[in-house]
Length: 190
Image (cartoon, rainbow, N blue to C red):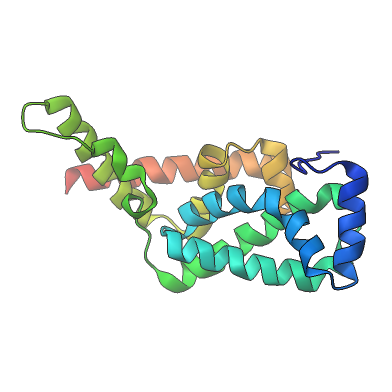
């Protein structure tokens, strides 16, 4: 079983989960802390903005607090929270309809571009095209690509996070990449 409890030991995590279930907010904060940064990174990519990613993580935090009684094992907390964050990010992205990669820091690839550096200009143009192509994708496509390529999660971790079979993860990643390539090609022709 995957344990991604950060600096927490198993006994600490179990103790914190029990305390959080009894309403201890500090225990909940310590339990969720190691899972926040990865959840925010993925939620930001799925939603396309830092603010919307933070909103999604906030929704996941509320859902986690309310759903603590449903969690059977503290060792599964990180995966469970990641699932809540991804689902919340998909909802937020579906509501917002705006998805900008440049806003989340990927635009730094083009920093320092000057007219004499055609390689940097080409790279900045490719990034802008990728931004527009990514914007065309459905939130579910963005989420699976974000989990795989931004979050660096394995197929089995994504399967657990989205509660789908591993084979489905592989086919969705493949199909999402094909749609991203098609969108990229369409943007290049614009």
